[in-house]
Image 1 (cartoon, rainbow, N blue to C red):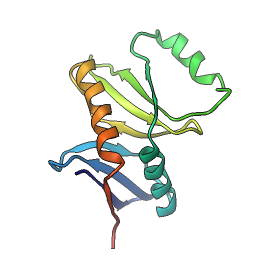
Image 2: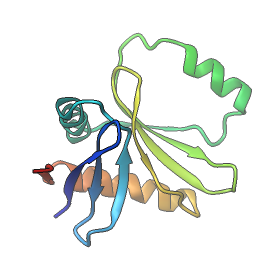
Image 3: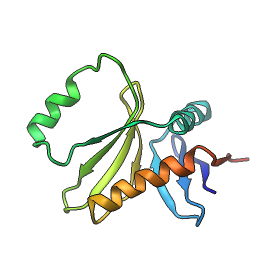
Image 4: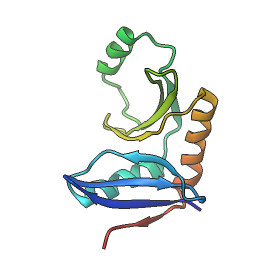
Length: 131
């Protein structure tokens, strides 16, 4: 079973989702308040049905797509290629902010497997907060 580990860092709080084997699956952005960090965890627990593969979209077009407002906001996972030829995923909340990013995967299939692991672990993961 996975767990969310919330840590106090300079500027606020971050969380990491750890797998049952205690490996970091993904890391959040910095939240100024603990309550914001916990709300983001809740958003990930609710999950996202959609996976948006952005690896095939040219950079110029990707910028245009990002600017368009969605008619019905929903959370989603995005798969992106990094500049070194690897792949990362990020979780975008229904309000449009990237709240979690993964480490780099060597293949897109491994990246998609990482998303599946997040979905599998997030719903039942316990939350460990700083004392």
